[in-house]
Amino acid sequence: MCLAVPTKIVSIEGEEAEAEIGGVRRRISIALTPEARVGDYVLIHAGFAISVLDEQEARESLEIFRELEAVEGEMLKGER
Amino acid sequence: MQYIDEFRNPEAIGKLLARIRSRSSRGVRLMEFCGGHTHAILKFGLRRLLPPTIELLSGPGCPVCVTSQRDLDTAMALAMTDGVILTTFGDMLRVPGTKGNLQEIKALGGDVRIVYSSLDALTMARANPGRQVVFLAVGFETTAPTVAAAILSARAEGLANFSVLSLHKLTPPAMKAILDAGEVKLAGILGPGHVTTIIGSRAWEFLPACHAIPCAVAGFEPLDILEGIYALVDMIESGTPRVRNAYARSVRPEGNLEAQRRMQQVFEVEEAQWRGLGPVPSSGLGLRKGFESFDALLRFPVELDASPEPKGCRCGEVLRGVAQPPACALFGRGCTPENPVGPCMVSGEGACGAHWLYREDRMLEGTG
Image 1 (tube, each protein chain N blue to C red):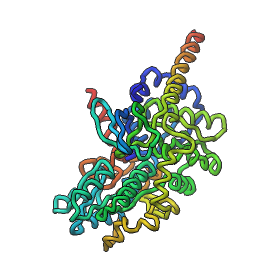
Image 2 (image 1 turned 135 degrees about the horizontal axis):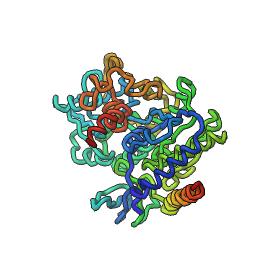
Image 3 (image 1 turned 30 degrees about the vertical axis):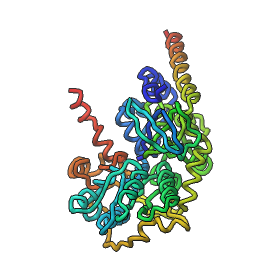
């Protein structure tokens, strides 16, 4: 029930917005995320955006995984 | 950035697993609070990929499952009340009450309708001014603000035929109740990513502070979950329990303040009955003074007979992490998602349902 899906906001009208995921558009409420802007990715839960996803933080997480790969790669080389 | 595939990269998953393996030196028992995590862990086969030192237990994080038998029976009684349209999320429909489920009540002529959002229930109330629309509000902190927002809208537009049966529950008190009971020795908690998006990662500080165990808040993609598990193992190995946020793209230390504000405006904290845990102080949300007119129970008082637990069902023990689903004598033998005896088998977040859906023999059938 706490399922929430990342969706991109394509238009905003007051507390309502249109969001798109996989080519499908649906109306959602942004009453709980007044900071949401067109182009933002938000997590949708039960018809409401519950957070605006932070792209910088997402990139940093992915960067850590990439560094991890590099470090592990070096370690494997060193072991050889 | 689509925020899904990036977090399912097989190569990064392999590296992270290797890192967990090399960091984990002793046996630890971790609890994933959230049923969404249980499903993702089993769906992506992560259990079998983790080293044998790491044991994962499901927690009470399934709102449908922790709803008490009494509260389920109350919802069914409301559904049978003349003039009422009972609206609810889809996974409540087949949860067995003492005398059948909502789907059966619907078949007998009860007006039960599935909605995707509390706002759909408002739309239904506007379209049916001669009927009473009751929203069966089940869910944790993730869902409660959406229901609060609907109630505030209903009040603003003077919608008189909308009310709510609030069965909302709060997650930190349940986690505390499990740790205080001490039935299972837990070394760390994988924190629920979407609940914590609302309440903030600070809400879990009591875990290291009062129980001396770490908490890692995680998202629901494989990399998110493994990053959370790595953070837990790392903190356990180094003996430095803290709260780590492994879902920073959505979770902030303070949470979603606007959602909290609306939730507090409409609801007040009260004791709640949990399946498996019994009464837990300060763990439920009732309607605050000034919002009584939206309380379905005040509008439609119901009278109930006794609500015994389903016979033989070990859902309560599963929710406390005391029993694993396959240990239940009914698991797959008399209790399946098609014919559930208890809610843990039928809910989309129930641990029994997840273990049944992603069981190993079935997975092998699928590949054969």
